[in-house]
Length: 378
Image (cartoon, rainbow, N blue to C red; front, side):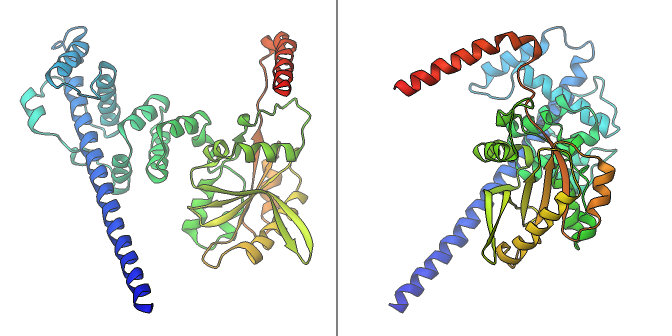
């Protein structure tokens, strides 16, 4: 019996080793393919820029070339007129960042076919290794979205790094840009630098949380009569959308998470695990303006989580207080008095129906009543 068990364990270990080798190989193939595609599109963009910005090509040249390419290479994807213009934009925008002047017609067709110049080998303004690695891990569609929606290069690099590190889909990237992540992340009043010993982890914590969260997906309007538990339950029922708002590193554990201390119950509004920080994150909701006393309750929850819930290999729990209003000066002073990692952010609910449509509210309510009645009858 023991030999069979040992043989089973040996086979399972072999499967694990081979599986990891396959996955790593697939990742390298995909990564190399993306590097090749990015270099190709950049170089083609340079070629299109050189000819379309001069007198060499007439009006409608890109459309004509795209159509002929489709005929020459059946099933060719990614070379529609709009995407070829994106390649041109891709080259022109990044060549400016690299302080490299655009070529003005001296690029030859045959050199385009036989020589693709890697971005890392551009003669001036070279990117550092960290930037190059992130740049090549991001898909071309992501790059186009970032270039189109973000004008400042600091903001563009922010989203490139986030996409590369957190494997954002294009849809996720659009949501983060729409919600203004760049302006919100890193600005939340907190005491992370003082309470997290490891400087690198503290830096990650600062970047992991926003100073304002848009919770319009909860379908609770600012004008509604609601309480904190309503918001908590709405977030729990739409947790995927909250994670898209909060950040890709979050994994949901529970809402109204029960803590038991000497037969006395306490409840954390929302409990998550943050993979980048490797720690539990407790979100506590407050409907009104921030009060320094609220931090005492949150600090207690963190103490209990660290004592009874946290695993030995995990970092200390982090607490985020979400309130509707705050005075940042008051918050910054208040959090300094606590030795638990905590921060305070605001949240916004949906603003409801625009004023010009208020006349439709009775009609909408009537339709909802009819639908509800039909549902009950069924």
